[in-house]
Length: 388
Image (cartoon, rainbow, N blue to C red; front, side, top):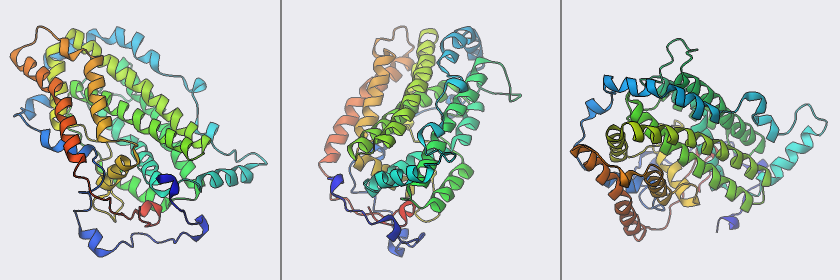
């Protein structure tokens, strides 16, 4: 049980960085025996059919008119999901108040609560925070897509307005988790900051090109994935007795849910207007498999850091292979993919692929789960090189 882990006093944590054994640094086999996670179930079904990469990564010019016809609808149905800054929560709402006479006491209480939480939870929380902190890459990627392009930086299209405002709302997530982790005293902030710099500098490539059909399919899936992940960290924080941290994670999850609603509404509208192209985009992204936006993360120490982070997320139950499958099933049902009519031959093949994928992934996950061995301990620089 996670609750049985004995934690060292924060004051006794050695301030070592990247002092991992050489055999670990050179090894690529440590990820093979953890609890079955997302990466394990995705690989066998990636590219099971030949996909025309070049044509899919750009949107056919004739599709521009579809998005232009949606602009009035987007202003009424998508921009309305945004919250103005004066009505939004801010990180300071959940953190000790530096202007208060009780500031130091509030920090002591935060650190006391944090001392009761096991290391593996903090590894996952740090990974989630780092993912949120790489927001500049996400805004750049979305803004580079056709239709979403913000040519002047202050374009007045609903797509450009959404991208900027969505980024502003998301920006609070990393700010809040970063400050909480700093105050907790449980993590090596220098290594975390190094990882953030690596990740933003590395950028991201999730295989959507400039095609908004692909990009919005990706964000629909990914926003639900972050909703699930932050929701599960909230549940675990509550289990460990930290109601304040549970509130932080739950509030972020609520934002992600609202953003998921926006992106899935756009795809839902595209299924109404252009079901053939939309189902082919959905199929294409699932053939590639949905990668987390932080898949290029590095701390300069562990060359398998992303895999080790996702393994820990799976082991703690924060984000698992079954969550990935559940999201796929949820989107299929929400968009009524099984009931699409009037598709071309290619569209029907895409429909069949998507609708048959979840049961296949479930069978693979069940078979793989039976082969799981005892999980090896892995050192993380984020927690001063301690092993979990």
